[in-house]
Amino acid sequence: MSVSRYLREIWRAVHGDPAHLSRLSFTGQGELPSVFQVTDLAAATIGAAGLAVAELVALAGGAWPQVQVDRRLASFWFGSSLRPQGWKMPPIWDAVAGDYRAADGWIRLHTNAPHHRAAALAVLGTPADREAVARAVAGWQASALEAAIVEQGGCAAIMRSLEAWAGHPQGAAVNAEPLLHVAQAAAVEKPDWRIGPDRPLQGIRVLDLTRILAGPVATRFLAGFGADVLRIDPPGWEEPGTVPEVVLGKRCARLDLKTPAGLATLEGLLQQADVLVHGYRPEALARLGLDARRRRELNPGLVDVSLDAYGWSGPWQGRRGFDSLIQMSTGIADAGMRRLGRDRPTPLPLQAIDHATGYLLATAAVRALAQRVRTGAGCEARASLARTAHLLAQFPSEQGAPLAPETPGDLSPAIEATGWGPARRVRVPLAVQGAPMHWARPAPLLGSSTPDW
Figure: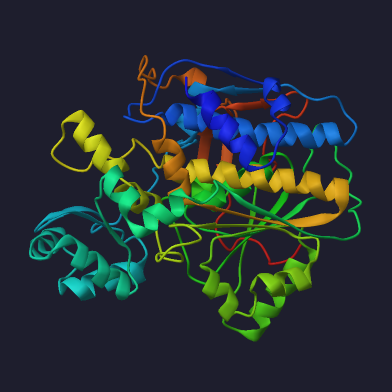
């Protein structure tokens, strides 16, 4: 299995002691259907995050807990953990989003957000009709359409091969980056946290400025071990296809950061936070007056964790992107098509790049909290979807037995009263000895809490 190889790379990226890897074990059988080792990536990233939690427990004076990951359940959580009871989740994709054949290749349009859909339709000169969009796309060279939509403020990606991506200036840049960029800040006074062995993140304040999907996965993990996670969204923002999945355990508030009052409230929250997780493009926070230097001034001990789509260097740094686009750009969808003999892009069976990056962010955040306990120093950690894709692509599939279909025994018996209706969850895939992962709050509606600690 490649799970150990993934795990070693992840643990090295967060400067973990390799001797601690022996405290992690894996159970569960079966593989997700893919030409890449998706199940192993799921198990390794969740395991690394759990190992970081175990280290924090040990640092507080307890014995080192054993950590175990169920590979089967991890595979399910990389898709969706939520099983509505008597209601249905809305579709993940809008009517226009998807893969289209251009004159010389394939291109994917990401149009879930209204402004991204408007940008693509403005370039194509069509209404929001899939057949009309397909006809218009067919008249474009793929690379020209990609560039035009991005220039318009939209999101698109042509399908490249692994080799083409490696030779592309952005591919070469991001593949040369570390899996995680980690930098320590100057030491300040050590925090007075009480790290409980059963809820090790109890009392830790996490300010969540992320949406769709990696960042929310990271903060959901932190909430599962007791962190007080406050998610902030702008007025009117909704993600009906993903929010019920990822706001488990959180409080969700709204702030208009374009107003002085909203920005002042955010700064006050930031001053009192222990961890900030954000997915804004770098210039977006700078325009608000909250660049990295200002965030550090407001909170010298802050654990500042961020994510980007296409990497932190190269000509595309800061480009908008999502998991499905990354799979097209980096060669994953092309590899699936070629190796399986398909006639169209064949991505991973789920949004594994997003989920894996989320657990990488959580691992970095928890290890940084441990560093704060030791030295008082804050930390900056950064990940990108494209670099996670490179990690996955290093190990082609050694496909074993397929994952067996889900059974009622895979679900927790508890009924969760979400903001949308009752639901059950797939049982958690991670066990940290003595510190069970669970969430005190059901998944709430966006904007259902006030923006305060």
